[in-house]
Figure (cartoon, each protein chain N blue to C red):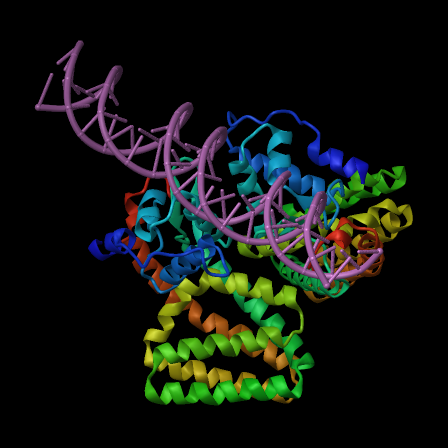
Length: 244
Length: 244
DNA sequence: GGAAATTATCGTGTATACATCATCTTCATA
DNA sequence: TATGAAGATGATGTATACACGATAATTTCC
């Protein structure tokens, strides 16, 4: 609880609008990272004055950043009550995972048909690099490469809208999905599942790719569900009035 | 061009924050309606001072509304250059329709398995009400009921996240999809396609439902593509600097 | 007369000030 | 002591003011 308050109140490096992008976008990115990595846990309240002071800016860009977070469903806004990091119900988490599995399967099916030989080679290369992180037990490295692996799959559909939609759902589940990478055993089994997926794509088997990807996502459902329950038991949200 | 300028500059009924919802949300809803109905055509610039004056509010809620529109991809923001109603490229429109078809098919497949008998009955009832609007040539009524028809399908998945995702894509294609309803012949053929879909759902045939819905959406692709081309030929966007 | 540069104008990005609403504290009363 | 109402406190919602950047018009120079 203490470090949470600090993570909100602590002064950070002052953001400058001198970059090619506005302050709000930088703020949004920072907050999103903090949410995904768990520094800002689900249920955490995000107060404008605190954030403004922390980043040394006015409330205006802070409000804009919070609205961006709310639009991507990473945060939830309650009128006249403030913004909170989204805390899913178990039912909603299940719905998110099913959606994610369906979308990944869909992307895989299309990608298996449409990827260029260069793209397929790239995917295979990432798969081998992932093997190395598993051998080293480098969960951070695995997470990064795993994201690249799946992104390559999405882009293999050659459909930007589908990529956008899939990524938007992926971002929403990210805070709960992330815990799987803390288990080295899960890293290994995840990579084993990737093997089948890569094989299916390389031989252009769209049906197998779809089914394997669906199962691959659903594998993570149970472990994330447990994590969510533990989160909800001891969460700032418990002190909240009428927060879901 | 004149009426476009008017639609932006004309004074409207002053919005009040007295409602249960904020001004920004009302503004966003109004602008969204104007975009979907074509009053604000793709490519149209949305200037904050003009909108603020038109609705008798300050720039703050206007900015918030524009950001909401941007988040739902109905508008596009170019830093230091303003916000414009989204004008898709033909390639992007194709991508949107493929995504929409995939999502509708997915929803239909799940709904065919999961809908309660009450929900199935509701869908059938809407289908019969749609028949009446076709008989009367009531394209506005058809559009309204058609939306309800598809919404019922989405909700039949019993997955709120999937419903959200599908609706978000649906909103994005709405401005281009709408033209089909101006043709009475299309109304009739659309309704005929619905017949097959309803039949498939009533007998719980998930595979047939998926395929029919995919085809149902793709039917509209060509006619919307033509509309988009005509839009891009004579559009305010042509006067724009570096607008896609 | 045409092209480049300078200035003028206007919109966006940010900051600050004011209004409104929710919550917590406090004190009076049953 | 418990309860409830009134005030205090602080956050959100909105409006206004200023700074920066982009575009357009005008002027100046070739």
